Length: 69
Image (cartoon, rainbow, N blue to C red; front, top):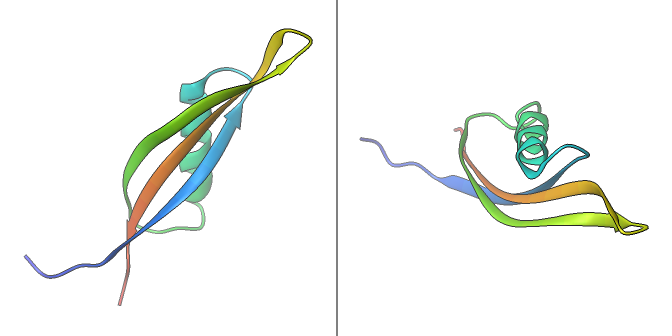
C-alpha cells in the first residue's frame, strides 16, 4: 500500500424534503468539482422553521478526498 494524503472539508446541503436528501444533494454537488471523494460523515443536522413549520432541512457533512500528484 502506498502512502496517501487526504483533505477534509465541511459542506452543508439543503433540501425541502429531508436530512437524507440534503446530504445526498451536498455530496453530489461536491462530486462535480472534487475528485476521488472517499468518506462522508454527517456532523450536524438542523432545520429552517418559518411560521411554526419546517421549510428546509440542512445537513452538515465532513468530506474527505485524496490529493492527487
